[in-house]
Length: 319
Image 1 (cartoon, rainbow, N blue to C red):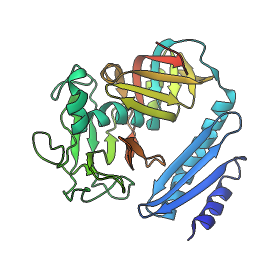
Image 2: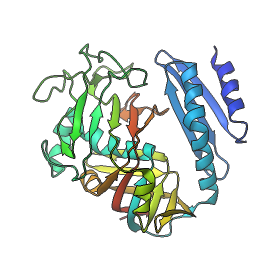
Image 3: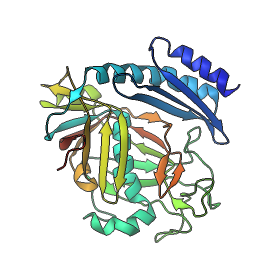
Image 4: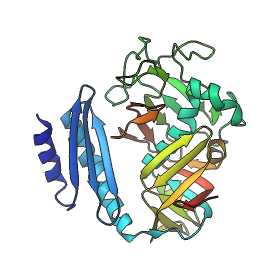
């Protein structure tokens, strides 16, 4: 199958959502699709897979629903008028990106050596009192971040980063071995010379709460949609959701906001975690994870997460 024929096939699946632009790519690492709609605000969804059938499955199982939800929300959204501190429920992909930035990157051995002393916590300390468990396991097959041996030739191994809320492990490589040597997380971009400690398949384990019960605990707050942008610099994180729907008295309303960002200190954000959903949703993102100019594919999995009183800012605003 060619990229042109697959593009036409996936575009036909998007016919009920007019105005979608479908781009398909293929390289030695697999296949990727990016679907965008720029009328009235950017709406975007993408995925990676080892083969074309994986892209079809992802589009049909999650992509079309995600695009439809985001399109409706972005069309109805208005700018957030002012900074506000409110309870927040993160949808699974937003939750995965938040944990990826806060816990995942901070648990990479070189990052930990660089700024771990500035976090206020260390290995063995708690990120949160909630029973949160986070694992990075590149040996899980079939994902864009899966591999058997890392780019230094070390066998990949699963690493429990957080267990029951407590920081328990780091991702290491031969060049950044930590205290116990490499655990097979040394990865490099194709043109790079140095392998860096990186995530592969990052998973947040399910908790005990149904998504609707987490939402039902919110008297006045927001449900955050899929991320439009996400990143971190040392101990600080910035997340930009495509939309935020108001929750009032445990119910999602038609009140929608856009042009907002969530930012703050990684540890302070995670310590506001109050509930973990009971169903984790996997995703193989189109956009690769960038670190020191090296981009590698990282797979993500997370359930809905509930946080108390996170600060949301109008986009471009200052604390």
